[in-house]
Length: 292
Ligand SMILES: C[S@@+](CC[C@H](N)C(=O)[O-])C[C@H]1O[C@@H](n2cnc3c(N)ncnc32)[C@H](O)[C@@H]1O
Image (cartoon, rainbow, N blue to C red; front, side, top):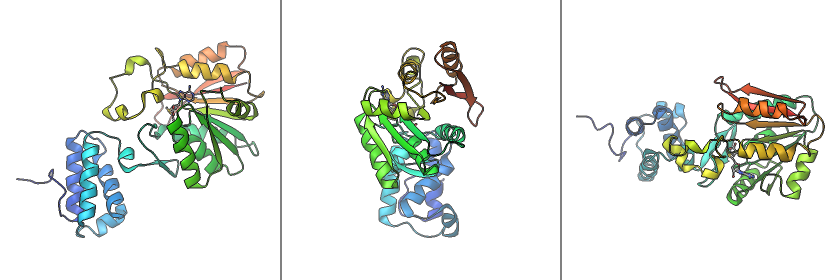
């Protein structure tokens, strides 16, 4: 009989790693081994390499208590980033908390595209709409110390979290509360911007109740945007178009199911000189760039 899937209890590092992995697997989590190592590192301070080298080191009572509590939350499919209160994003460690979208790895590709499009622009100005945890704005500010980066979000908790992340990372990103570009500061930032970037809510309403269990922990206002998922993107493009300077760009992350249609819509509107779709690292065409 095996006790691999049982409580962490007093055990050594290797035994705890196995029990974590088995229980995560039993909870239906695909990346169980990686998450087990991440949990162990957060509980003990041991890096992945140290977890191998110190496999016989006993866990103390506090470590066991923390691991068991975190594991139960993760078994209930709360995202690991919320369990630990931290999300890695483009080389940064961001604080995350319930009520604010956990930044996703695919959004790092949007950051890369924005950075590439600004390669030859000195002291670029960038405004991030719907900044959430501040992920996009902060990653751009970290990569381009000469940039002037601002951000906004309609949600008060997101504004607080983004500001806290900017302060913790020592990055000079100003964050305002604004429903799209309704706040004068946000509109002025867009008028001055070389790039307006957004990862807006973009899921069709019909997806409600059909998403992985972890997504239930994200605020619905950060996810859903009308019947075709384009209501927020459409409103943002409509508000940004008359403000952006000639040559100014709008970069959006959308759903691969609706990005092409949205680029076609923008291309058909005389106000945009160019609109195109680009793929993420998995080949899913989800990033739309429109140029004034
Ligand atoms: C998909 S989340 C993206 C968060 C963050 N940019 C990221 O990539 O992790 C969408 C964000 O847009 C914000 N949002 C939704 N509607 C908005 C609106 N009308 N005006 C401004 N922000 C809005 C939500 O509060 C949420 O933070």
